[in-house]
Length: 440
Picture: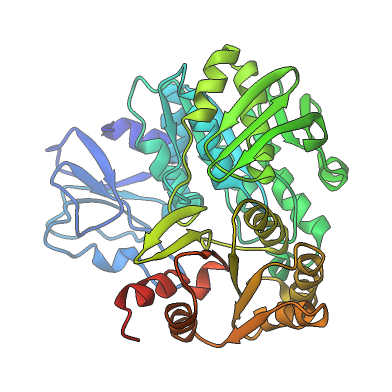
């Protein structure tokens, strides 16, 4: 997207420090390594970097700055108080200019999967742009919007957060027509301190929600307790679902007198799909279009990703983990696969009660099928193992991924299916890479 000088100035309130009149329009670049002569550099700042340090680079001729000095080689320089704020304001301006249907999605678990499900449905009728992967902070928000083509009809934004106020910032700049909360659970409780604070943070998604828009969410009391939006609200629940068939990579279910199919396992994926169904009907899609959209969905990397490595079958669900998602995904896995091996790692960001949260998972899993081989990796995951061992369940505990990979190679075979679940910091993809090497 190209912006005129006037658009950049008016959208950000910038002061012109220098203008030699050469270029008339610019695209936005935040990376000096890939900048072109048609771009204006917008230097971002973070805890460990300062983009303004690169303004003196030889290929930078047009740029934003927070200083009041322009370089000699510069042709066009705009001064702003805060470069990230300017980025958000440019994104808001472009969103309003294109004016697509806007959908904001957040939640403690399942928000990326829900975003992909919603995209699969909405794109059956509308030309749709979505957040790439899990690039769900303010920077990813801006990148997603500025990547819209001029004929984009629907925009889906995933909103993540590390603390209070971050989702609100995205919502107010997006001004969504529809807002979805997948659930409010214990993810990030280490940062926010309580489930109530988590619900408050998630409900910030409605801060910029159009008063004539629609809020869609899992039916949870804690969400309703902190929800301030006064407009239309739709709450969905698995209690309204009839599961008709469950198999590896397949689920068939009935919801509100219609039958749908998913090419993935798990009741939690059915739950995630309900928001896409409700939104689809609000956007005027036919029942068949919604059915086609759901059936076209496939998991993205490290989210229930089936892999055949040598003779071993893996289900890699190790992109992230919290107590709710770990319990739900393990339950689904052991229901669907023969000779299951479950490898669990530490869950992060659970705060001062992290040991108890891990024990809680262990107690829950100990009440499921006993015909499961469990492996844990890490000191916190060992707390899960302790609870399983109390019930006489087979568990092996390791401190590293390479030890775990060695155990797989030496003790398991093609009859097993191996499930991986842990927080991203555990880097469980290393287990798979080490199994590939064999000689470990």
